[in-house]
Image (cartoon, rainbow, N blue to C red; front, side):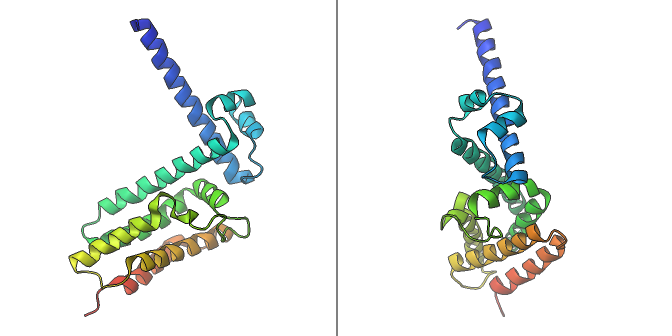
Length: 207
């Protein structure tokens, strides 16, 4: 391959990546405002200013495109939480950081939360799973369970079943966020503080 051919190939790859990202961004916008059922390939193409055929060139179906959008949202969400947990000074603080990060990301990224609830939950208030177990996407509760196990190993948390407690804490977070989505006047900072107290009461070693 000549230098000119290589440069042309790299430019095409960059352009294709940029177009794919544009389509994903448009998909997130539409799902968050119109809902999943109303987010058609035609609507995405119109929002992006391209033809439907162009959308299908990059993503062969609506399912492929929306799954990619959801995966990207979940990756960003997971990265946000992981970064804040990694900065915690000890295992118990890491669990507290997890709780606050879970709330903080969703507070600051309402569009992305809508994508998650639209694609993983039904439309009955966003509270019932379309597919049982789908809330475990990206090993969410398993990540928290691992943090709890680290705290137990360090001797700062009491003995309990980490799976059950991780699911309970995750369910509490989901319940608060679900209520906030329906009632945006809920003070999420105050709610996060209450969830911290709730979590510490559930996991802290008692003297």
